[in-house]
Amino acid sequence: MVYIIVLLAFILTWFFIEITLFLANKNFISLNNSKVIPYNKFIFNLRILAISLFIIVVIYMYYFQNVKFLKAVEYCLGIIK
View 1 (cartoon, rainbow, N blue to C red):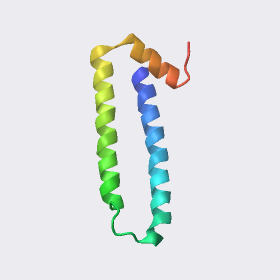
View 2 (cartoon, helix red, strand yellow; view 1 turned 180 degrees about the vertical axis):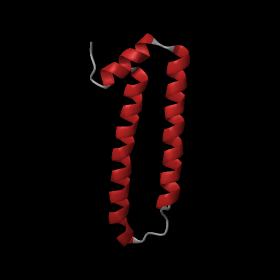
View 3 (cartoon, one colour; view 1 turned 135 degrees about the vertical axis):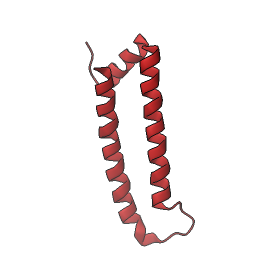
View 4 (cartoon, helix red, strand yellow; view 1 turned 60 degrees about the vertical axis):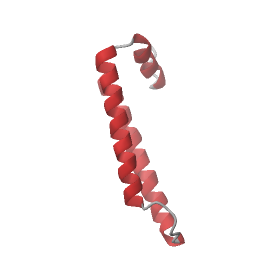
């Protein structure tokens, strides 16, 4: 159950990040600064970082099953029993 909650939180967070970056890039195109990181390179690095962090969390949850970590996830998602 906790894996589903973490996966759902990751998907929803990533959805809002993608929308925000897309809208910010759309508004930023008109400024034409040459010393900025290209959007495609930035989003690629951000996606790799997000996927690696997600994999690390899943591995940690699978191997360590820490009760404090599970309670923290439940608390952060507002599922207090």
